[in-house]
Image (cartoon, rainbow, N blue to C red; front, side, top):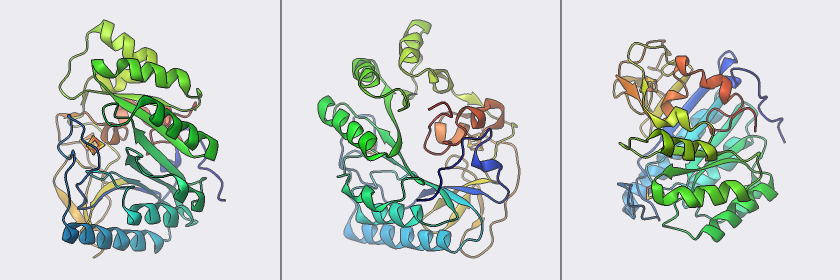
Length: 294
Ligand code: SF4
Ligand code: SF4
């Protein structure tokens, strides 16, 4: 097993040449049916699934060939871990000596046995709990199983009023070292009293409560952090559409530029926005959303 990424101030991104990649291929289907999601119960036809698998295998092959440190967060539109090729990619990348971290956003509806094949010093999970899709008890057991397997993971929930009791129960039932995050529901304005209730569950809720003003501000994306799609097209992040080149034909060159958008309201973006100071808060767990004190 490789040593775990050190929880140093600034995280591994301070390492020279360390590239963090947010990868999102064509997959856009999910086995869950969350009312707040456009990908609920969407199906991909066999052709799209095949294209997604081939694109993912190309990407993992590219990562395997690097001679510099790389960390990867898979951020599929839908659910990746119900597909064998995502589980395989997680396992394979976890064993590569230059891969510091490989993580995925998931509802973790999949079985956990494949995790036994991975290097758990490198693999991590960003798990989201969707109370309308799985019983509380079943989800809690899944989390406890991850704890007993020694899997590094964060778990979280969307901050809707009907989720509050579930979030409180989960917080009480999981060990303190498991970080439970709360994402502000899209477009929702929280009163101070409501925000206090969510902050009691997630002390870092203030970072999600309102969008971060980002226009003209320093953001590490485009330089040490990039977004890559199934064709290898590189953008600075998932939110700025401008293309910076292609990963596979060598046309991408890292460049430092301020954010061109007015606000950034998603953790996978604003964690890299320098004025937030979140590289210190999440040192050692930037991609999988685990604070340094966990
Ligand atoms: S689990 Fe995630 S991708 Fe699937 S329907 Fe729910 S929110 Fe959407
Ligand atoms: S602040 Fe957010 S939207 Fe702006 S460049 Fe960074 S990640 Fe992208």
